Length: 131
Image (cartoon, rainbow, N blue to C red):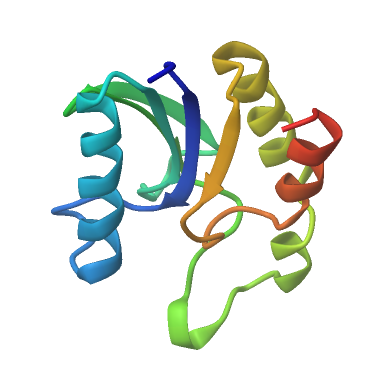
């Protein structure tokens, strides 16, 4: 089977975020990595009071390259909604970060687990990049 470069997009990681969706996503990514695929998980993650602007934190887990956006400008409020709903559609800092990850990781496929904490404009950015 040919090696595939996969960029997963989602929100959070365990144990920081519990629940079925994150467990499913992490199990799927780890299984794909064990099969020899190159898997990257771009996730909107933690928020720290007093830390300004989005930052990127990188680490590896279960063979998956984790790229966490810390202090995303899109604050996930779940049932309470977001503070700035327009950012759910387009957010220039996160779009630039996404394009940088596309250039760096050169994925064959982008798999969106969920868009919480990410602007939906990244779907069009992936399409324009031919992914």
